[in-house]
Image 1 (cartoon, one colour):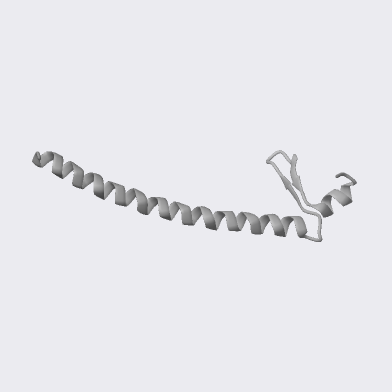
Image 2: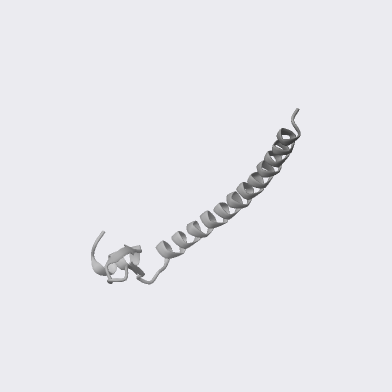
Length: 74
């Protein structure tokens, strides 16, 4: 085999190992993010007080059950 080809194969192996490592880090971060999203969702929707999420213009994007009851909307 050509020396350059052997070197290229070695570099590809290193790159593959690095990519796998990055992929595992991303999977872990995604799992943590999903856990926090579920936690936020649960806290928001089970809160006894009315809670609203608005955009920068004040348009309501999300409301919990207490806010819906207060406003008389489903």
